[in-house]
Length: 457
Image (tube, rainbow, N blue to C red):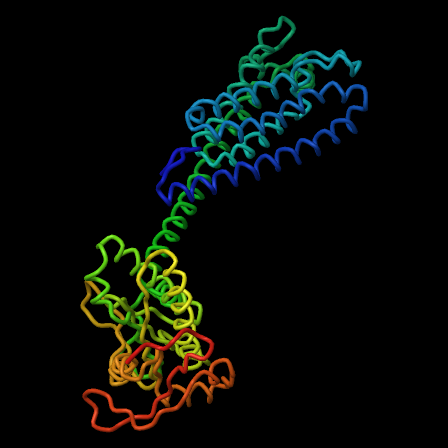
């Protein structure tokens, strides 16, 4: 686990550091708010004149909180300064409690100040240290409070008019009235009560340190889970990542459901790969993949896999939606438009022209996990997948970027899609034959209305 204030290129450490910075900022605001409340209370309790004696000290506490945040920006300073600041806070509070206020007009003995109950403010220091997000600093804050308070009270114990305690034999020899008088003596220092206070400060710091350690582990685990989720998103679509994150078991047993399957491929990629240097080819391929996958995600699809220079996507997996066919149809057209725009943009950069073919079919598929207990893969199988792949190849013969089956169009309309921007750019063709299929099928093709010239057959 990273140290307080540590900065790292590791995503988990970076996320953890951000949470730590946020906690420190919240801690500063809490300290300022508490200081303001205590300032008002001190002025009310002591009066304006006597209370104003404490104002510089309260201002120091506010600045000390800002110092914690400032030190956190410098990793080299973090290892020592938070502990020094905690000790200075505890020492200053001890002085405020035990040093006589020259403006309050009171001439109490020093031991009498131990009866005012102001040592409870040490608890606020210990609680406030939790915002450093460091268990060691929190534990040290409890110890620092105990040390500062013990040293301050120890100094009072050395004063000549301080009465410490009696032996057990002496105490037993006192009458009840003498015992009461001794306990009420303003010069008497309550050693037992002091020991309890020191013990409480240390235990409070340790207990809170354990809690902070536990919170750190939770935040660290959340950051790690976020990184794992981000890594999953590099290989799966967002909706698939959501499904994987919600379940501890395989996605489902094999089942059949209606799904839109989309295949897209770069036309003439073999020629491009022969003409372009490898580094430029890979850069171009990554850019095209980014454009295509973005459209899949925008339209609620699942990116099943990259197929070399293309990809396969599904709409309606892992769970069926209300507009899968319509979303797939709009995605196919959006892909064509996006690649047309990239085609013109790339020409200005010296890149070769890029065109795509998109095949889309809607129908029943078999969904389920394939593999073994060591590695599972979510698979989409069936004739619908085969038809979609062959429709993509048909784009070359028909000279268009998009070929979709009549079943997809019918399903999209049944879902309520009647967008003229979609159907106004499609044209029906009947009796189209696909490789490996005996019966011809009816298809719809993109007419390229408003777009660049269609792909040559």
